[in-house]
Length: 383
Ligand SMILES: Cc1ncc(COP(=O)(O)O)c(C=O)c1O
Image (tube, rainbow, N blue to C red; front, side, top):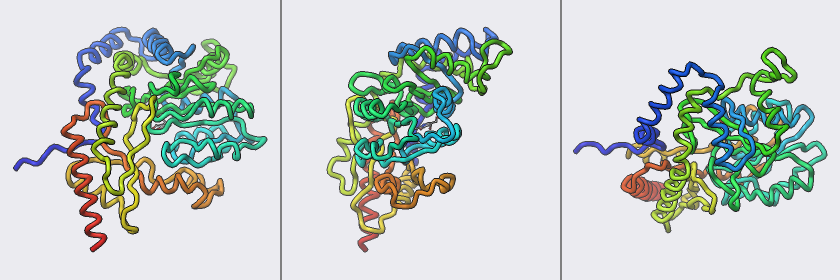
């Protein structure tokens, strides 16, 4: 019998095949224009992305990491400042706080949303706190109304990390437009992905937009006039052209992700030991991440993953070690147990294949295999 095709965590070739003629044409137009850095295509994408989000300005850059770094720099966050964020995220969120010389201060996450626990956040505010960097993890928006109330009461800046949530909204207003600056990643696997690195910052503030434009381009105010210590972080024209082709499809793709997520949750209903992720109206389902809970004490998520892998099903663990326990952050002095929710999630989360083009029969196979693998695990462990 021929072996069944494997199911990847994400298959970008399906999206690219569907758009191949338009993507090829867009690339050819850039090649024949001879303008590869900046220029009309980059400007055109920036204005379309700003309009899509309802922002006054979009300043593109080289990555989501750079977007966070430049956003912090533009607000003059630096040495001596504390910036509150979540320990349950990709390293870039905290790394950029450290890169500007400030100190990341972690606050535990909510057990269902996986986002910053807003009940705990106020206790972390000190006279040195300058900003909050919330993350809309896995595409689920944080309650931005409540977060902005806390930030405004304490006069703190808010820089939204929207890397995983392009197109998500909280109460009808797009994430990224709530805080002073919203930061986006166009890393290929993101909901709106380029074919290389890319990122963007959005803001409603004219002066901040000007500073961000200068900072991303060597601090330039003229061709050879530099008022700020900037960096070279620009979106190239090829990436902008490809993103321009993809942007009009983003809402449809996010809707398809929603359907995939709802179908997973329906199929997983009642499965022992599995807690499906929280839904929400503005969720864009960058990941479908469940919690593997209440199985025998020595249950091993790794062996569950291995069983799924042997059956051709890819899964991922985002993230196996919370940031406060990463070796690079040992100097901050956090101990195991500091953030029990993030630590428990790190040991229990499992992300299933998730992309708009995932087929219903593939989803069924993922869930059937998961059910069989869990039954096998339980049997082995119970003897
Ligand atoms: C939450 C979060 N923040 C920031 C980033 C950084 O984005 P980039 O890879 O474009 O630098 C990522 C990328 O994975 C991310 O997931």
